[in-house]
Image: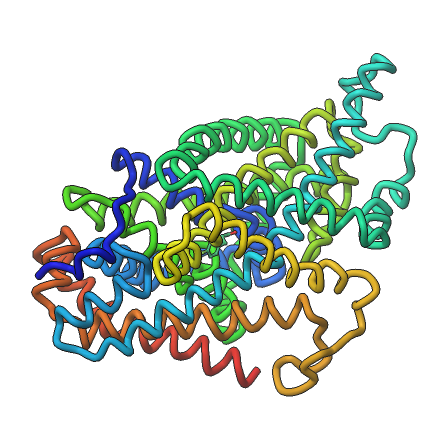
Length: 472
Ligand code: PFF
């Protein structure tokens, strides 16, 4: 059962590790470093963490394997690969809509992801400046922003928000780097940066976490993240938050794992590779909590949600940490690396499709899509400023939301779960079992378990996120 010749990709990873690092790079991003810790904190600590791990293993992992196997069978962009699996299964090629929905989701996430990554660049600048000042004063071993009040340090974020030009400029800079990587291709761009940035990221994360546990309030952080309060677990909202976060964090429902799966060779065992990616992503989320909260609690501050935890509470917390400006600088550099390996994945999914579809060179496609995503992202950047109270879709779940929040809700609560729901129905019920079983690399009891999960648990659980997300 061969895929349609001519539409197949000729690009690929140079090794299995290239694939693992690139896909892990996509999964590990702002979602792990900033969203997971604040979600865990506000949703009941240990109860959330345990339920999150269940979601990753029982729902995320089967969907992740399904997405990569669709890509690897089709060996083309996500839409074309899904069509090939449908065709080879005697099913309607309309199932490729699942990839189209995911691709739109990936593109829209990119529009605001780059804005937030721009803030990260701003904080790198702030901390770099502070390191220089501290060295000048011979006080590098003291805390960050010495001599500044808490209000002053927390005031950097509103100051950035007040400066539309700066926010848009940094957004442009980050998008330009993302486009540059994608223009260089799969092996020469995506894989190359993953091979350099991901190991560096892991070293920084472990180093910062150990330092944070040693110098900060480790006991309080452990209690906050892992204290088990079962009364919180049965709360519907907590469960749905955990499932939604697991999807976003594993980059599921965004056509992206289908796209990266297509670059994997036939020898790659997709099941064990998917397990490594999911395990790495989940470990990073939990370790990120153990890096951030000891610093925050040692400063006597509290967890907070949204941008506040990473961009206000944390910088202020570095004030009381020994060598705080240097560690703060390393921290934001680490966040930038994670964001970049995710943003390239977000751009690659639509680029792979558009370049084949329109017959354009990769670089031209990447530049075109990058400019479009940048332009739409300007509205998200301005949602923290002059467009804060602009509510362009004032109905239903979008009521009272500004542009940034609308894109966030539309992708996180509708597009990604819808695409992942269709993936599980497609692989669980529609696709030819001989074909999917041949690709997945598992047998025996594990195989039966995967079959059961992808056909039953995944569609029901993901269907639930969709429905509850829409009505709550
Ligand atoms: N998984 C990324 C994160 O946790 O930040 C976000 C993401 C990247 C979602 C790539 C979807 C995607 F295709």
